[in-house]
Image (tube, rainbow, N blue to C red; front, side):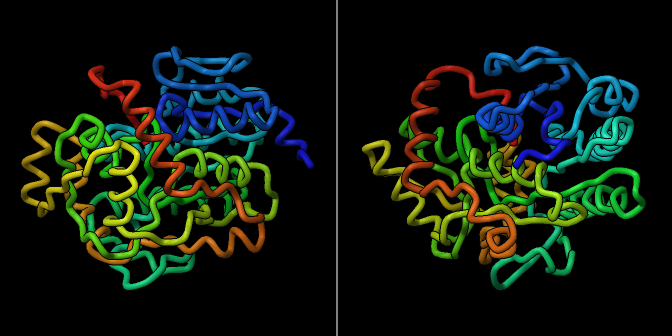
Length: 324
């Protein structure tokens, strides 16, 4: 059943990123009216999608681009170097746009605020970040939930572990998949045999779209379902099978990752997050499954194959411009 909010326009702010783009496609697949918003106003989108320019840090512009919206998705992911100055303002701007039109707002989030864990991550874990990025993420989530508690905006948060897939830039992105397709060694800063639950980006988009239309989800944090835990070793073996060549893996520490970052900024900025892959990095989404259903869960084999195909199609071209 489509709620009154869901029958209105779905506005995706940050539509040029990997998650935002996947979300636009998922909403179109569901037959929703979609407006894609990014800074330039230019984006490759499915037919029928309206594209508007808008800086998420500008509340006045967000009020304009959210006109007629029933659901607004904040998929903004500023470059790491501008997180402190841009991310809080982007959260405030998108909240202002949703508040202006009485829309609900879905916030795209990760798991960095949980810090060091020894088992599966659940939504009720204490917030104990051990990195600057984690502290910022915790604060942003608090702002989003506080807007709901105050009655300003109906909000909901969807969280994912490390993403992978077409156009995703993460520690599983170009330094692993791109390297595998081009025949270079993959750079990995974690353990090979700790349990992990990487999430295919289309599955995250499916979960976010579901959260945007579920009244019972509002005012809460939700982990979006993933396949059963695997390990980096097993995940890399699937990449080897998909590429037809053995993936060589170079395991490095934080200092070496920072050095790699002189050529690849995502590695430099992600170095402080390496602790996540030296401990279990498993998302428990049982609450989502119990309340909202099983979600869309792409097998690792299928997700890896589709990601390898995407990198192959772009081999030799520019890999710049990726986004979570």
